[in-house]
Amino acid sequence: MLSAASGFKGISIAAVDGDIGSIRDLYFDDVTWTIRYLVVDTGSWLPGRQVLISPLAVRGKRLSDKVPVSLTQEQVKNSPPIDADKPVDRQQEEALARYYDQRYYWEGPYRWGLLAAPGMEAMAIPSPITPVVEEMDARDRERPKGDPYLRSVRDVTGYYIAASDGDIGHVEDFLLDEQAWAIRYLVVDTRNWWPGKKVVLSPEWINTVDWSESKVHVGLRQDEIKAAPEYDPRRPFERAYETRLFEHHGRPKYWEREDR
Image 1: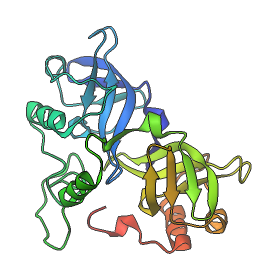
Image 2 (image 1 turned 90 degrees about the vertical axis):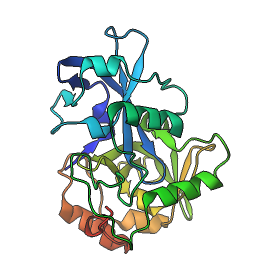
Image 3 (image 1 turned 180 degrees about the vertical axis):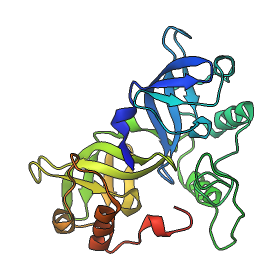
């Protein structure tokens, strides 16, 4: 099952001994397009403070109005301070991971380091798979100093989407796999190009993102996108639909890979 990122806004975070606030935003990394942190507004409980909660702390399935986490209010209260309105650097992430005794997600070949998904046991490292950390390090060397790799779902919503031969719309939402906390699709509003229709695009089909120009470039033509199976948010998002979508674009299916 996939969930709309917009549906997380305002949902409460439930520690083992009480609520700690509500979700204000989601941060994802621009290498694997994985949700790395829930940005939590602590409201009147810790006035004027926001905290970052990793999906590694989530316990069980999300309820309709709460996300349960395996943390106490005291742990959250004493966690390293973070200014969620400024870029979060690796040093701050390391401090958070050490404080909560969590694995570094950037050290290992899988989406969550040695874990395929939060809540799973550590897996043996198969040598043929290139570790995610290598790709992240390569990106770090390429990007200007200080350029963040953690992005805000709230900020990226509204980015323009460009096919190889012209614009097709803008990002309306994201569809998340809550087991792996992976962004599986960008939901694209095509009202100015194909009125009344919506399409979904996998982050794996993105060529580049111009963060300064707020534009996502995908390696597909307009006619390919228009001829793809239409996305209807009123219908269940099923594997059969995903299969038709990936086969239409001639792309490998993410659910058939070890590093999914």
